[in-house]
Structure formats: C-alpha cells, structure tokens
Length: 242
Image 1 (spheres, helix red, strand yellow):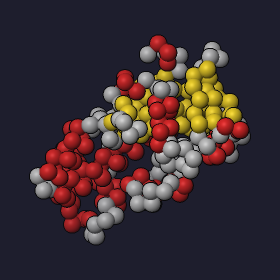
Image 2: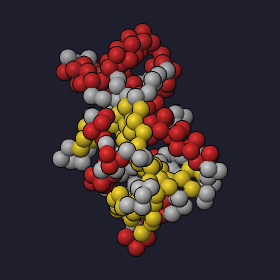
Image 3: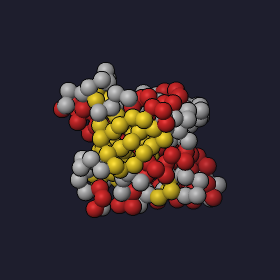
C-alpha cells in the first residue's frame, strides 16, 4: 500500500439488488414475474454470497495526443504510469484529474452460478448471474457517486466511464497497466493470462474530471462497445445507469 497511500480509497460497501430490477434484467425470458418465488429464493442466497469491494486512486493527468495516451502523476509530481488508450483518449482531454477504479463482488457468487449449471439448474444459474451483474453495478455506483461529488465540490464536471476492451483502440490488454494504478491485491483481484480479471464479476475503469466537462454525471459508453448483447448494456437499456 505504500506506493498508493496518499491517493487511495478502499471500500467494502453495503449493497442491495431490487427484485424488480432482476425481473427487468431478465430480457431473454418472457413474463419473468412468473418466477417471482424463485427470484426471491435466489436473491436471498445471493446476499450471502456477494462480497462487494472497491478501490480507487486519484491522479494528475497529462495527455500525450501523438501516442493516444494519458500520463498519470501522483500528488508529488512523480510519474505513476501511462495508459495507451488510442484515439478515444481524446475523451480525457478535458480532465484536470482522473480516478482509476477496480471493483468486485468476489468469487463465491460465480462459483455458485457454475454449481447450479453443473447440477442442470439452468434457470437458477441464469438468475444468479443476472443478480451478480446488478450487484457489481451497485458496487460501482459507490465509486461513480464519489467521483461526481468530488467534481461538484470543485465546480467541475465528469467525463465518461472508460474501460479497456470496450473502446475502439483500447484493447483488453490495457487492463495490465490500468490495474497497476490501484492496489488490487487489497480486494483480491488479479489478471489471468488473457488479461481478464479474476474474480469474474469485477470491473475496472478510468474517469476524468475537470472544469471543461459539461456534465455532472459520469456516463457509460455502451454504445461504443462491440458486445451488443452483454449484460452491462442491458442494464443501460432498462435504465440502471452506472
């Protein structure tokens, strides 16, 4: 933690997932209200399985347009790292400061999803996975609100939520450099050989803040992602914004 001590927040927040949101998120199933009792049961089990944790660090930022990159700096002025984002790095051009975050709900819920699947209980597996996505969103909300509150206190605005692998030009390999900017070991997150986070239900992003941003809310960029049918995109369609 020594390298991050001056600029890191680690939270283990209380979260909740509403039954109505679960029903709305069940886009592949007609009349999800038919499964009201099962949803109640799986939700109760999920509450015992999720382990929400989130950490974030704040940095000064200098854009390197020729490289499509952002150079990040600690409060002392010491370089912290460089993120090669590509052409969409321009989304950070207005940033005076940035926040890097990683959040997770732990691995127990995903293990139970796999257990249900192995037992042939496909519906319970699907429901628990849906609930896990919403739980991860609820965890990330604590970060987003904190960033927006900070920007508001400075009379600034907030830029969009930017994720490796979801922006053109910023490949999933970019997670390696991003995760070096926060103490992910403190919340039990790591990268596998495919640059995917473990536990599976984890999330990483960077958000810029500064006086040049015109919005007080940090919005997601689902419309720019190639994964047209992912569960994160569905949450936006049903109004569960990040």
